[in-house]
Length: 323
Image (cartoon, rainbow, N blue to C red; front, side, top):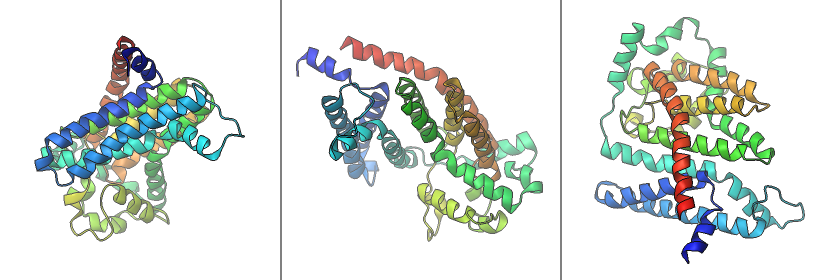
């Protein structure tokens, strides 16, 4: 493809697309270089290649069908509608895929967990384990509510993003690229101090339902979260296989970024997002998923992410404009 044509083609990509494709390229190179150390490097490598190629094909085909349009006529054929919406909303699947591929790299390159140190820092700050601060008023109804809000982490950015998308303006792109950047930033930070959380190290994971029972949904939501973290119902030693994603708290980073943009962009759901978001962050300690220092680090790095993303955005735009 001639240089001018390639440059014109690159203009149809959003910065959020370039974040995803760039991260997939970096991880593909790392998996290939470290293949002797990784058990499933080949499957992860080809998954990343697909994650590079499919968005490119999807974006190109979408542009041929719709140009820059953010709307679609009802008369469009099913496959055209699929292309239209897949182009707009493939981001969550890409982010989840990259998260999954990050975890074996963390366990391989930094296999030492820092949970005991993090727990000691909590005790130094509070004089006790962080979750014990709430032991005096723990009850099944509060546990149920907090387990629900903790699980809402997966939906809060989608709710805000959907409202912004329906406005048919650039606010959706602004929000999407900031949330994607914050996710990727948290994944990289997990390498510094890998940890699995107090529910495995400080407490008895098998006794969690008895020690901190809910009302109805708590058990099932815990099982779903455990599954997402790599722990299955019959896992013999879950601490060995669970994902290393506690320090800093990605839940805190993403949730605070979501709250920030929900208010900054004046969304209708901003107050609901705030209530659920603050409850979610509180739940991370109450439910024994995180240490207090994870949350403090999450707050600091959420602010840093909001500062860094415009810098990366400008850098990527300059690259695109110079090609």
